[in-house]
Image 1 (cartoon, rainbow, N blue to C red):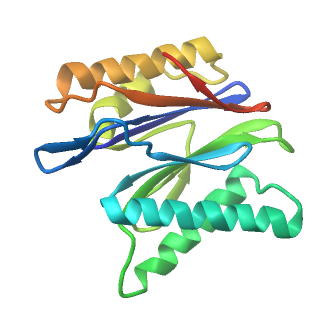
Image 2: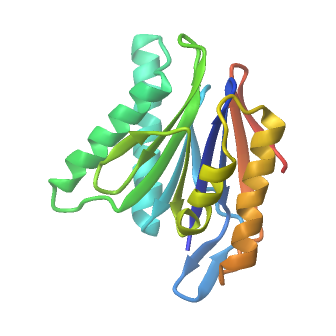
Image 3: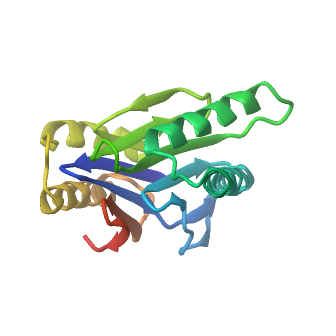
Amino acid sequence: MECLFGITGNGFTLLAADTISARSIVVMKGTEDKSRELNAHTVMLYTGEPGDTVNFAEYIQRNIKLYGIRNGIELSPKATATFTRRQLADSLRSRHPYSVNLIIGGYDGKKQQSELYWIDYLGAMASLPFCAQGYGAYFCTSLMDRYYKENMNVEEAKKLMGMCIQELKTRFIVNMPNFKVQLIDKDGVHQVEL
């Protein structure tokens, strides 16, 4: 029942994740944070099996931080996504694979551009200008395809994200009242309201 969204724009990436934690027909928690800040310019959104998601997200977050401490450099969003994809693919070959779907977004300071990566539980990865995971993908991918344009400004991206969330509230039977929205640009990660 989870929904994750990502949109890139002119010098920023906008990410949104619902805050509902549900099991079957029961809502367990309405304030679940489904994001992890991997470094100053990269954020990972995750969805999937409840135990797997938190364990995998913390494992990736700690390894990215450890790499930064050991080497004194911050990994780019592409390097972070590639490392994460490899860890997910390696877990498939173990006895206990992680059932986690991800969106990794950020801002690459060297290239001076925003980046967005879609990764599924099988370790498939794609670099996209916009993406969605979970049930939201069924409702909003076509909406983003129609209204997305290259080099969107922040207000246009926020408007498109708002349209996606409104579409879910209109069409999806499950009530998702709250979304945590984050903006990543050259200055770092910021919480934003739509």
